[in-house]
Image (cartoon, rainbow, N blue to C red):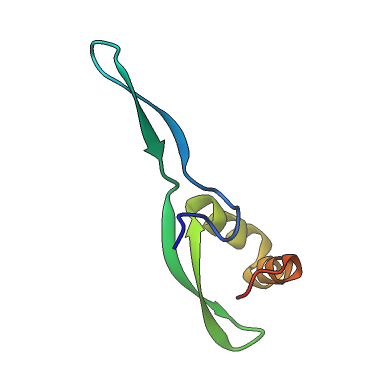
Length: 78
């Protein structure tokens, strides 16, 4: 499964590791993903989402049902 947030779409980005002698090598910055279960009260069921910490804050701000409704409108299967 890809390391992508289902809410915000955050994915790994690339950058450089810089050593003490200033040698640069490629590395990946991974998003802070959590596999989290949420109870969707309107449908009386649990859903599992792979979300970043920013995605959890978005759910807290806008409400779970409105976020899920927006995702379903975009075509994401939940």
